[in-house]
Length: 187
View 1 (cartoon, helix red, strand yellow):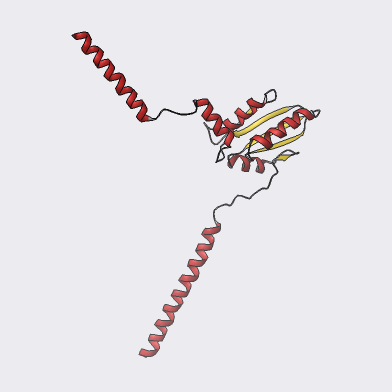
View 2: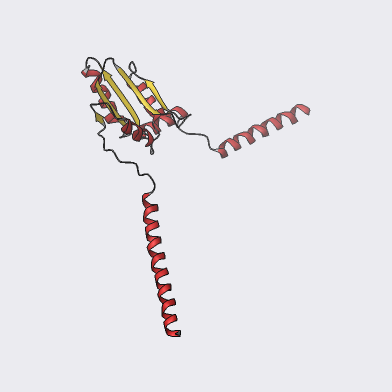
């Protein structure tokens, strides 16, 4: 009996180990698949149709900008200007959706930085190229930011920021000069 009870206990231990390994493997694969994987939508940078709501959501969630150009009568000059802007300046961070509609519109759509759960729509129908670029840079959240947007930030701030040590040296020099002037005035 001792041999048979040892075999039964051994068999139970083997079964427990087998089921724990199988359960762990099953649990691990379910955990791997549980996070809702967002479907990847392959879009060309310029589409000649209206985007679906799912496409819009994916573009905005990725930090990109939707440029929506609708027209009643196609203006080839404006269409070419907008397409060139998208291709040359946005570094793939914007999708242009252009299609025929009842009215002419040029909207830039991006995530509102003050309320990340909302989209911000900017009307650009009468904007020039530099205004288009500045508004694109304001709306794009995708990282890394396009190089030209980063350069624009440097130009706005004047290129370089003073280092904290140079400010401290300048402040101490000003303080020293003020102290000397006070001492001279009292003499």
